[in-house]
Amino acid sequence: MAAQEAGARDYFFDNAKFLLIVLVVMGHAIVPYIGEHTGVRTLYLIIYSFHMPLFFLIAGYFAKKAIDRRQFLKPVQTILLPYLIFQGIYAVYYYFIEDRELVYPLLEPLWSLWFLLSLFTFYVLMIFFKYSIYLLIPAVLISMLAGVWEIAPVLSISRTLVFFPFFLLGYFMKKSWMNQVRTIINPKISIIVFAGAAVLLYPFADNIMFEWFYGSESYAALGIGTVAGWRSGWIIYSYHYSKPLFSRSRAVPAHRVFCISA
Image 1 (cartoon, helix red, strand yellow):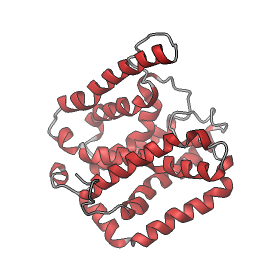
Image 2 (cartoon, rainbow, N blue to C red):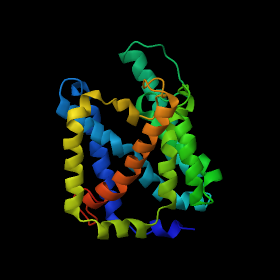
Image 3 (cartoon, rainbow, N blue to C red):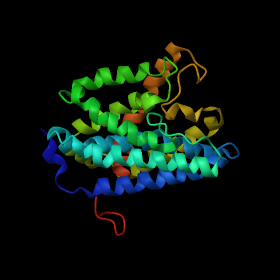
């Protein structure tokens, strides 16, 4: 299929992954201050509004080869095995440092390990969704249903359903699409969009629940009904899909950057 497209090295993705890693670290670092400073909360909301969708979009793009060639062992070695190892490390850490009960919750990821478990589950789901880009429609609809019920943290099901459409889109995404976006949109526009979003968001930041972007909360937990949740969900999904493709994609350099690009 489109496996060949991910063959040639594209420095845009190297730079984008580096930027996302920096944003993840920054996002975790400013958590203690989001309740004290509106500007910090605004920055936090902006970071979490796109960094996980873009992570999974890129992961889906580079999963083409393994999925198309049915390399089933690769996600086991590179995703599932690290999850199992670090799940044990975190369990021991919580036991000795935080005085928790020593348990190994195999199916309930500790801290940020939900990312690995969801990513591995995406490879499994692709067995059913890899045949047509139009399957993105039911994938989005299913993700919207994830907010209707209070879902247990087992297998990180809620986040898996919410973020799977981005992985699926990344799988079907062609390099030519990104090239067209980078050709059409001026880098200055990306900066203006980013700055404009911050300015518009700032007055409302203290009233916006950042849990919307976690993908782990039900509509009821967010304090709204199902219908309102679906409406808000569509707005957020539209924002999720447009910002990584049209704003951040043009702001990230596509050439080799010293100490960043591999």
